[in-house]
Amino acid sequence: MTLTPTRPTPGAWPGLDGVPGGPRTAVSAAVARRLFLSAVRRLPVSVSLEGRVIGTGGPTMTVHRPDEVFARLGRDGLIGFGEAYLTGAWDAEDLTSFLTVLAADIADLVPRSLQRLRGLVQHRMPHSDRTTKDQTRELIAHHYDLSNDLFRLFLDESLSYSSAMFEGDLDLDLATAQRRKIDRLLDVTGVGEGTRVLEIGTGWGELANRAASRGATVRSITLSSEQQALARVRIEAAGFSDRVQVDLCDYRDVEGEYDAVLSVEMIEAVGLEFWPTYFSAIDGLLAPGGRAGIQAILMPHDRMLATRGSYTWINKYIFPGGFLPSAEAIDEVTTEHTRLRVTDRLAFGADYAETLRRWDEAFLSRADEVRGLGFDATFLRMWHFYLCYSRAGFASGYLDVEQVLLERV
Image (tube, rainbow, N blue to C red; front, side):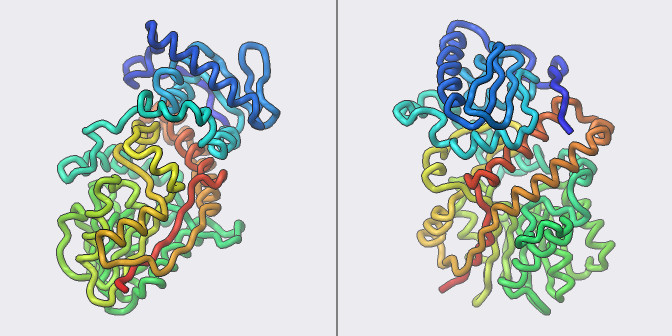
């Protein structure tokens, strides 16, 4: 299913109502047009623009309003490119396939000779998106407090909002693959009868329930009131209220001693400047002989260094304050700031591409129900773009996901 291009409702989406204009935009749009055409001419895509098709052949992109596309791209870079999709200024029959081609060539879309000027044009993370203790809850709420009912529409019955683990078996149903991921993390951290577990980032309670089913006692912390409410309901329904508590709490405020600290795809919301704080907190909470299990989305180290401090489409529309680490960054931060060392890691990025494919198909198939929750056509395009954009990162190999085991050695 594809989404029909629709202009945003006036006033509902600030910045999308009007097309950027003025002398500065005219210049930047002209530059953006030249760079765009130069890039797509050599890529395996087919871009329909002003009566011609550009590219060497491959996934299609149709530019409906070129002046708007290049104005937005010129003024706001990849943020503007994504916004032009939201407004319907361009479309793609298979959005993931088209974005995957771009993601595979992301380091060279702009000529390297011009990349030295990145700092002059790249948007910087606003101060309001710093993941400080007094701001983080609001940043988390932007995404996770949207609506539990929305997430229920496209997630599986486990309500796991992170990569599943298929291990090559793509016939596996998503809920089973999600539980396989959780069980592996519990296995490598030794969670069993009597284990004291801290979970940083509750999700909707599946990991806590599975840890409790092994006989562990669990404290799970979240900054999303919506997640806390539903997780508590699910934990009670599973019969584990006596073993699991779910608290609204920042990881920086946790006290106590735990045999296992688990955190699934939460480090992405920590923020680069607070990675030392995050890992130091985990180090300080682990009992002697304890283990920490982290599932993390990763980007290449050179790209992480090149883009740190930047403000992206994902930051603006999906995860304010978020930033992805690299595998090397985790090694460096833990070595420099903690007693923890990585003793085991498993990468399964292709499984994330498959997970996102299934989420997107489920989301599109229930578009009418999404509208019934009060979300408009622009939100539908935004969420579809987010899922496809993310999937393209994993499908191209630009992004990866790992389960990382940390121990004091």
